[in-house]
Image (cartoon, rainbow, N blue to C red; front, side, top):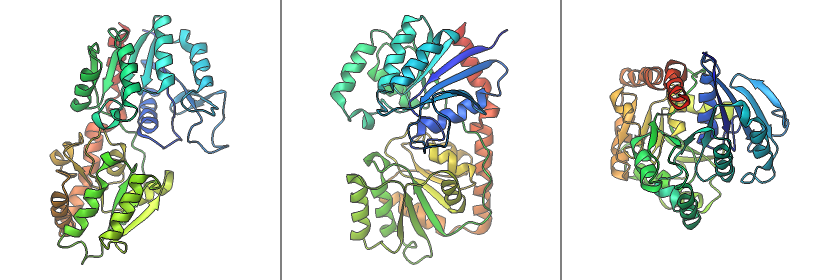
Length: 375
């Protein structure tokens, strides 16, 4: 049997690290590039990539398959991406789209329909209640139109909650695959842990960072301990400024450090040194940074509003309510951990990854998805 050919049009891709889509797709492509049954091609843009870091406007071979990074001045128009997509579409059997409301994805969807191609569309959390509020009227119009055309389209979600949102907003979405994101594990970790917690991510109200800050004041042990909280991310928006002010108001400036945006080796290093990573979100379809922390043997505390119940199952962290009181209790528990118990948690991080999230161990799941769509 010849290989099934899958074309991925996507707005951003590694080495961009600005969002979960570019990182999670990069991991999937690395796994698929080793497959004997699937052949991939990716058309993307230079969004979020430093000048000179990658060759542009030409097809290049990578360890995640052939890719063309197109220059673009307007990321949400990405004219060159669409032209590259049209020029290659006849060579592929399946089109794998990302993000429902990215305009080039919608354009590529209708082009794929015209070429009578099989389509699978990864929603990447774009339909949840928190994200849907932004530009709600325009999104409703987009979904109203799309709903007439998606009856034969396949969709990919990463958790049960995301499937609920998809069925709620696209009534004609019938063919749904619920598959978690997988990770390519190639992280070399630091053996030395330091007494700090880390939050890495966007500054957005759905992230629940204010509850984490408030929990520090409620904790019986944190203020008297050597522990600090380090927060990585661009905090220049209104929510970021609110969090910055909250730290001042609660007299936590000596215990909370704002690092700004970090990527690459700097990000891996800080995740490797942290005792715990916190993600106290009100909503997540996955949470890429949780997988990245686990790869660094850093246990994780995340909320019950994220799809990370396996942290509890594998004893690789804590899956708890994100109220300040609940988080304060966990912080006290963490600070009181003995070295043997902490080492147990660290070792379980890798067990969780290899068993549940390693792309090489689980790539057969996606192979079977593409075979089902193709046949």
